[in-house]
Length: 189
Image 1 (cartoon, rainbow, N blue to C red):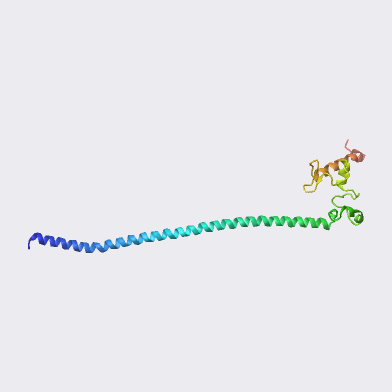
Image 2: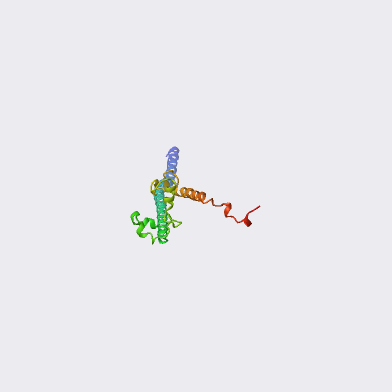
């Protein structure tokens, strides 16, 4: 056997041994890289599913919050309605709203049993609307009053009209703070 052939066989044996030693390491490395890729893919898939569920829950929470705000506003509205009804009940209990209970043709029949209402504060039998109508030349207390808004035909609110009527009454009586009513000892000199 020649030396060249022996050297070739030794080199071939060394290569075969190296290949047998390196091949399992290469397979293990490839297997590990494949497992890492598969694990990374699973991580991304699960993270995506969690994000989808989280965004869906966010939408549901937002919807629930909006429904809660609507429910709170409805509750506040109902509370205000209840308070309004309580105020009306209180007015009826005190007899301040008897004019709502008695029709115009029944006023004479109930004149002796009704107390002074909000419309008839001074008890003279004429309402503030009657006095305002008389001052403006109207005989019907409902002419020119829009019950839905509480404003007169001139655009004044009931409060403004009452203040105007009060000033007119004061002027007819000599003014609210007339000097004639002040005793001499109280006058400043």
